[in-house]
Image 1 (cartoon, rainbow, N blue to C red):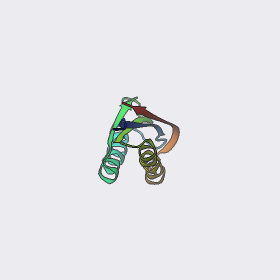
Image 2: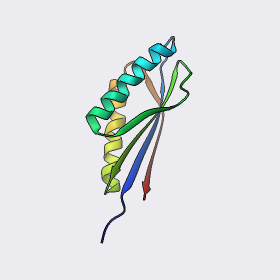
Image 3: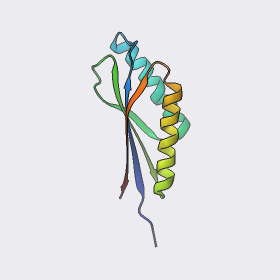
Length: 100
């Protein structure tokens, strides 16, 4: 019997209080996303409020055969973001697991 794959999605809102321009925001966000992709092998992108200097909405997705594994990966990504994003504060987090 084959189990259904699971897509795990993590949505994170970051507040960048010291950001004074879109260029400054994008430098911080691009660096974080690059490190997340490299370290965890996930898909990651900025998905909202792209024109606001001090807010960033990020989405991270992973695919796994096991929901617990997907949830663990996303939890590691969140801890990484909280520790690495010294210029930003995590203000909202949502996780969803989708069976396909």
